[in-house]
Length: 110
Length: 110
DNA sequence: TATATTTGCAAGCAAATACTTGCGAATCAT
DNA sequence: ATGATTCGCAAGTATTTGCTTGCAAATATA
Image (tube, rainbow over all chains, first blue to last red):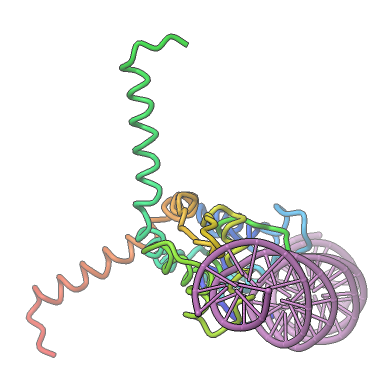
């Protein structure tokens, strides 16, 4: 259970994206995170380990608790990769906008 | 081999990202794509199937060839998800920039 | 028509993934 | 000191992934 460990693979899992969404707001300890999900604490613990291994979160021991803090700088990589294809969706959105504008300008009564 | 089939999972695989990078430039048929990679044609064919299933490419039959064309509108979803955490890496970059600026302004001789 | 090219389908396999349960080690509260 | 809380480690399992090889269908070329 340890091979590819990059940001793209880390955010592929919906549970891990949910965890990111949770700790991005505020640092949270392991059990509090686990309580929010239907799977076992161990399952969440593994997700946290994966996120930590690829640098998307950092752990901070605080007494018997481990606080997970978001470290989302590496999402920059994903952003860069996706952005290079931005034209593909902005074109579509522009087309939609034009279409809607034309609907307004024409004397259509639907 | 068919469960989650969303954009995040599709782009998690480096081979699939490479395929996207290839067909984004120009539509390409299956064998030409496969020739560029070290794995078998069947492996590539499966990757193409996955990409097609989640809407990142469309197939166009042309004689005995199947032309794969990029349809990257759905990358918008990824962009939206990542963008909401933009502060996490822009803060870091700003800090770096400030640091570098201070290096310039100070009378440091290293 | 015979042959080569392009491709999908199916079976099979090793490894990775996403889980679970059980246990034990810290740490904290009473 | 006793008991509860927090949490990692280990073992075990089912499913998914990424890949392979073999075969057949469709299309093009000679």
